[in-house]
Image 1 (spheres, rainbow, N blue to C red):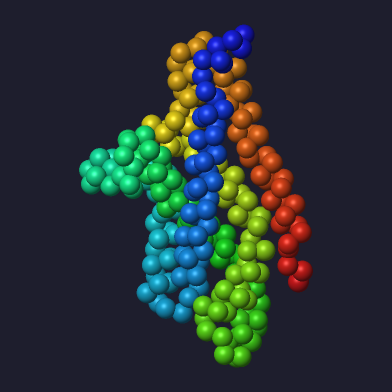
Image 2: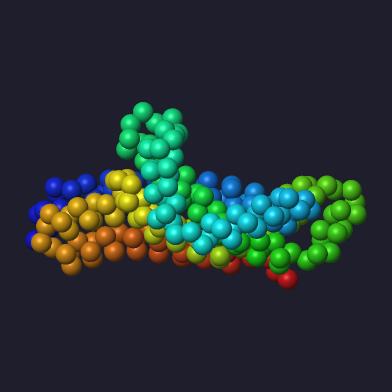
Length: 221
């Protein structure tokens, strides 16, 4: 019943999924933090850019963004992000597309954390001579991250599941292999159950661990 599984590299496909999720998570956290800083910053132009970016990107389907990275950037404009092979280029472009999309949700999660920080703390920091960037870096963001662990956990879990969209441009991750196996084998329910279990193994520990971390680092008000 399970003999056909040896013909497919299931662990390799899930490893590609893990790489997509981890790289995209790091990039989204960095870019999303910068967007959150723009949205609460004192410069109107930066606030406008951050607001427009979040509202625009959140309303574009992820599939459209991923396809644009391949068809628009790679095939039309020749942007390959330094890759010398098409499969490597598609992987990097998929990471880029996931970062562009997920960072909008990271930004909003962090902004919700920023809103939990009492205004008086920022005012006190400014009163002793700290600049806006210092207030944000030393006072506001450390507390915002602690308050936003829960929302950021949900974003990370959603990102892990969203990596399946990378199959649309031929990235050899779990969803693409599942599609190939279903086409080749008459084991629809078994194959679906295997891949569903694989994603549960990826997302469930993440939720449990980060949920525990969130309780440990929560800011006591």
